[in-house]
Image (cartoon, rainbow, N blue to C red; front, side):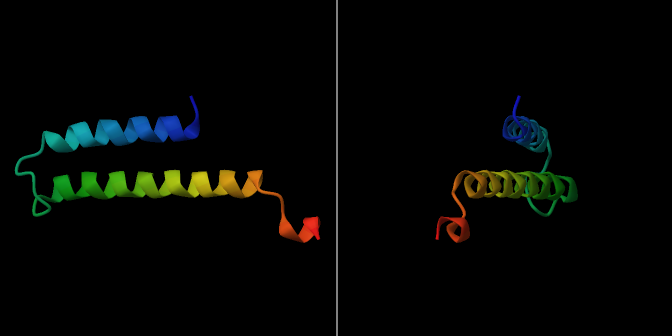
Length: 64
């Protein structure tokens, strides 16, 4: 499984756990922490995607 796949699985697991929290509100500290964790994992996925794109794109300095 790729890193992105593993992160996506973690996000899905955290969202399921978050849905069991009551109340479903950012006023609930645990619900908010789950939400923050999901956001952090999504940022990591975005970073990995950008790094992969940069590695696949030829360097402009070496092209000139």
